[in-house]
Image (cartoon, rainbow, N blue to C red; front, side):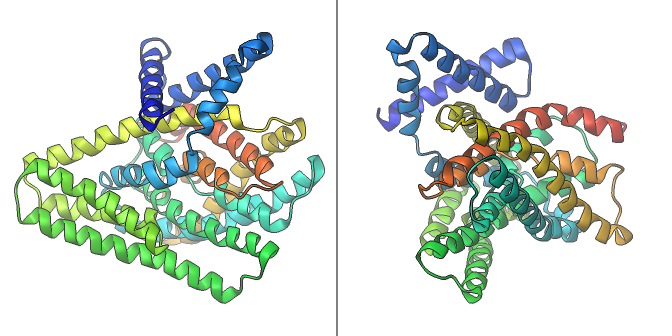
Length: 415
């Protein structure tokens, strides 16, 4: 199949499944797509068992294997989705809560990585073939970051106080970038354990270059785009400038081996706040924000459709499935601890809504980024169990946490 054929299939299925959900199920759009895609994948498997001579599952799997999920998400969709999310976030509200957001996105993420990695290292050893501790930490690193795409999508469907919404959105935007950096470092150590040594100095340098370099690039690129947009008043061209900003910034980050997610998030915050206020007319603002909202909806649809369909390429060995099911409460418990520690540490100096820890814990959805990172692992004996565990946590997170988030918020916050 050509790239055009694959795009046609994905967009066609997204439209059909989206119509079915809107017309009959009435679920949040992205959650509905995941559920329908999962049901469709299950139907393909059952039909293949009943009529193996047709080779339905083999054909469907062959199509999916032509789609490099990691490349599609991490080096394709992610830049647009992160910018689209960041451009709509109020920077002032983030700045007011910079300490809690910063701690959740760094200290909280590291705590979760260690807790999940340690627990899963023990559980996998009980249910299946044991994996080295460093590879368990790699699993912890790729599953600990909350997914900004999933989180921001859910925030659109519920009403919560602005202060709590800023914490959830800000953490998801920044711990995604930090999480990719931590994952990259731990993976380098894991691979280095087989092919050489990675020293502490190498780790520190990699972190500073990845995170710091991404931040500097985001500021510089955002400012250049801001200068260009301030000097003109042509909404179509300014939309094009923002699109070029996203793609060029992310591409440069990839070639310089610095954090593309951090770069586009910072550029998006700059353009969506300072740029919208001082470089755009009202007409331009409307067009720019509408363009990114539509882009966000389309790519979200395709991404969550892919998440539902990827079940066809996940290993379903009983021992691995058992470990995957246990991973769900473990990840939630680690999330609660990683949220509770920073918030408790800051509680004496800040205002927190009732149930903030519980809402932040349950609202920490995982999504396509975790699956993409799992699929990017080198082919070895550890990849299959890590991918299955990751997929189980992501599907539970999107469907069950996503569908119950509104009810949970309603318990603590009265409109």
